[in-house]
Amino acid sequence: MNLTLKQGSAFQLPPYKSLENDELQDRINVARQQLGKQLLILGHHYQQDEVIELADLRGDSYQLSQMAARSTDCRFIVFCGVHFMAETADILANRPEKLAERAGHRVAVILPDMAAGCSMADMAAIEQVEAAWEDLGEIIDTDDVTPVTYINSTASLKAFCGRNGGIVCTSSNAAAVLDWAFSRTSRVLFFPDQHLGRNTALKMEITNAQMPVWDPHDPDYGGNSQQAIQDSRVILWKGHCSVHQIFQAEHVHQFREENPDIKILVHPECPQKVNDLADVSGSTGTIIRTVEEAPPGTKWAIGTELHLVNRLKHDHPEQEIHFLSPVICMCATMYRIDLAHLCWSVENLVMGTPVNIIEVDEETSRWSLIALERMLDVK
Ligand code: 13P
Ligand code: SF4
Image 1 (cartoon, helix red, strand yellow):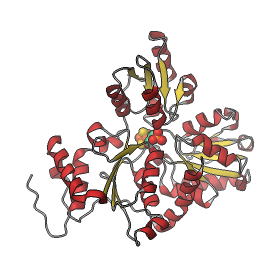
Image 2 (cartoon, protein in one colour; image 1 turned 45 degrees about the vertical axis):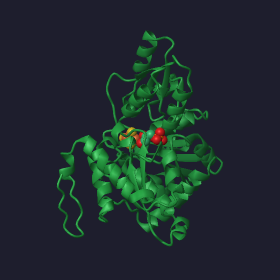
Image 3 (tube, rainbow, N blue to C red; image 1 turned 180 degrees about the horizontal axis):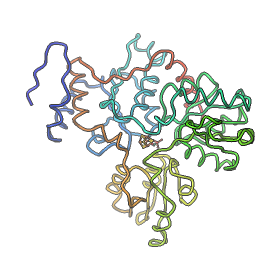
Image 4 (tube, helix red, strand yellow; image 1 turned 30 degrees about the vertical axis):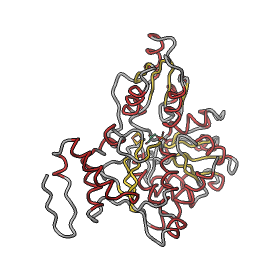
């Protein structure tokens, strides 16, 4: 490809889309060499293979936030994940003590495709959460409620939690975070994923009767009676992951009928019925570890994102691995990050014309950081 560049103007994306993967890979590797330690490419395990192979570090949401928090000598983080992950990386990599270590230089966090969002995160808007908090205050004492946001949420919701004594959680520490919350208050407002909230709280012997679901589109206390709110321990936001919601109890039954010794391994974003039936439920990191540690010949039906299940299948030929649903479900927004977008992002970094920088405003960052640091401190 012949790229002509006007002084100071960025490369445009369209020409990259017609390049073959081999050429894109080579060019990304050249850009990586040119940028050296200044560049850190982070990738979530749900990314397509071509992309994850080029990540310097890969992880689940919790591991990636730890990596961003630890980042030392890099100047650019290219985040092969979704928007909320890039926001979190920006907040953690540019927190005050890190800025001081770098004499005020910010790490620029780049999301190769701005359309890589998360449909679950979009299910809770800050205005809706603030309205819910106010409505709840008419029925219960909100000083006795800890707001807990799943990390799959916009920075404004993390800031809301920071301002209101709350905390962030990921799927790998949700139980410890709920313990933290209950050591402070008798109730929790959990958003945006009802399934992670419910599946985690059920293991703590909180019952469904104590977990009303708050529908932000229902103006009448989220569709709940005042009594239900008064009896609540965890108020669950009516949000879900469109990928994990696909898995159903009947899929588990079908696999078990055909394969009595099969083990069912699922992510806690799956609905309760699937979680209750599963042999193991855990975060992406737990799913990977569980397969890695299993003896050869173990049979699995795994309920999580398709790219990860296919990679596990490929990496563990000594085990028999199936996708739990007959319907293919991948995270379409993660999939937006392809080699063309990655190459376009890193070549623009080399040219000094960065594109797609995610920068959270100072006030939102300050309060979000409080909620994120509470999470990182929870053991
Ligand atoms: P974890 O990375 O915490 O397992 O979450 C999965 C997910 O849905 C990421 O968006
Ligand atoms: Fe969002 Fe679900 Fe995709 Fe994760 S898998 S980014 S929760 S839509």
